[in-house]
Amino acid sequence: MGDWKQSLDRYLTTEPEDNFTPWVEKVVEAFSEEFYEANEDWIEEPDGLCNNWLNQLFGEDPEVAARLIEKAFMVNSIL
Image (cartoon, rainbow, N blue to C red; front, side, top):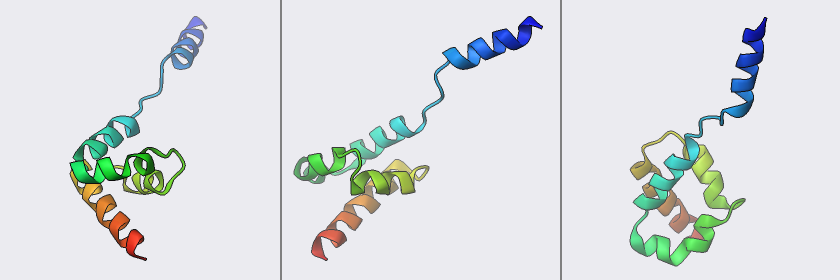
């Protein structure tokens, strides 16, 4: 009977696995230096377009995601 209490305690005290944050850090590191420096505020905006794109691209190779976001930003800026 005590096993479920131990399991519940472990469940409640163990932080959930977060794969998103380390992936985002890799994507940000993969941005070109010029792009990051020119758009740091836009990249770091919690509810902004970059965050939306990151959520949509989650799971892609970080290098690929970084290039896609840079290109999409440039296209979006032209429009």
